[in-house]
Image (cartoon, rainbow, N blue to C red; front, side, top):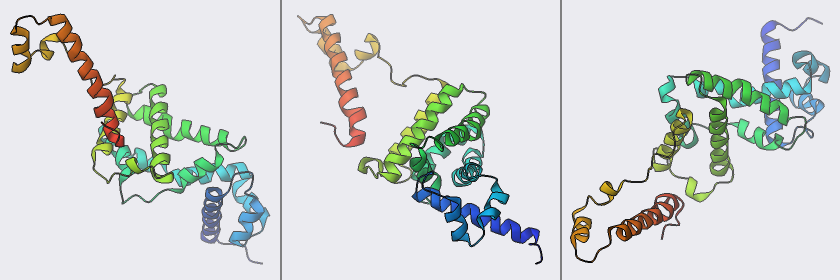
Length: 241
């Protein structure tokens, strides 16, 4: 029997990897066997072992191939926040199987360490390095934030998050990523008394007889807090009153 050519071996290896990705997106790590994958491809299970060494190594390569972190992190550092946000909303980006693998493997005691190591070495560390050595704690928070939004939007299909590409939510997510990576606090700050009293009507109130400036300031701050909590935030989810 003639040995397989290099190109044939590579093609078969790729078919094994693609089949493994399909299997791991549908069933858990424990429920996915190398024999099942080999049978789908039409090769002997020993050949799968020769190509990948073990089920855990095959799973690790499947995760990396499905996630494609290098594509997500390509480009100038200044564009990354917008690019990562757009990835969640763009119609041009087909839902990647990596998200499904992540969901299927979260509760697996064998697979979850592989996913954790992948996220640390292939996404969090490279992203931190690209963003001028930003603290990994911030980058891990960005990673968790993106994963949560992706699951709520693209898997659970939560209606308020199904906004079209280029909308307010995409911009809000990009700004949030930028703020976290820079270590910035909320862009909203408590206004000074001078700012609160800058409008002509408020000035008129201040000049009126019998108005207590301290009480008026307290009332204005309560109004601002109410608007912030009930409109600026809640309106994104259709609950503003």
